[in-house]
Length: 260
Figure 1 (cartoon, rainbow, N blue to C red):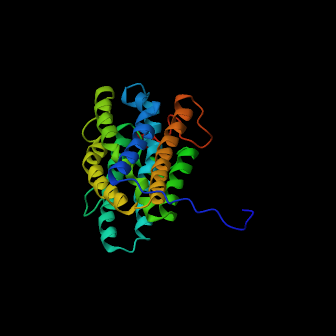
Figure 2: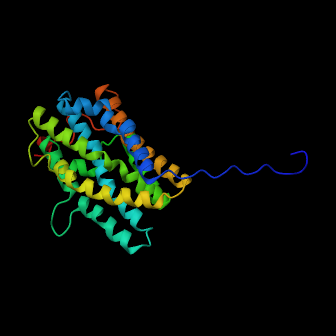
Figure 3: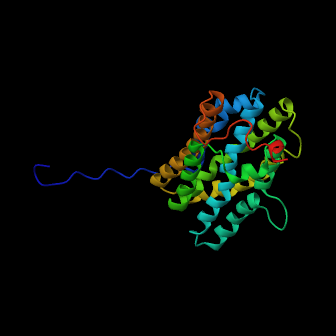
């Protein structure tokens, strides 16, 4: 200003109400969750070839196997014992506990059902580079970003029960490999995911108490939808359009028949 004075600061934005902010988060999922991706429509509609299904199982393994790792990274930064106790069940859900199998073991049952050697899948060989980049970026995000952002990024689970239910119905209808054992991962997540969401959503709504924190939480959830979407883009390009890059899984690799 010519007279040496400074303009008045802009008034601080008010945070949205709890109800309005929850609606904002749910709207992100309605617009951006990966149930809208054409690969999932192809999969659930019975249009995927056996090798496209196998490619999905191989690549989705990288995400499944990294979930307990990102949760462990998150817990290593949490000073509140109550939050650590609550979050601990997420690791047990995937790794198993007291001899009970977890989500990782259930995913390998699916791999076996579609004709893949579980040891091959668990090795991570053949995973698309874009899948690795997207999933590893998510692990780093949860490890490095503020706790609020990390928890908010997990809220894609708000939208997971519907896709799991659609997947169970579609796979049972269209694919011979589908049965209670091979689909046990998705059946179990129908119970686990809502329980995780109930805590995570309440925690985010409690702690996102300024407009800036609400913006950060919404951006974190958007980032996570991008992580999920990018994995399916890579699958589509690699196996529907036939442009799998060097080092990626190829039909005929890692099969049970090859091991025997």
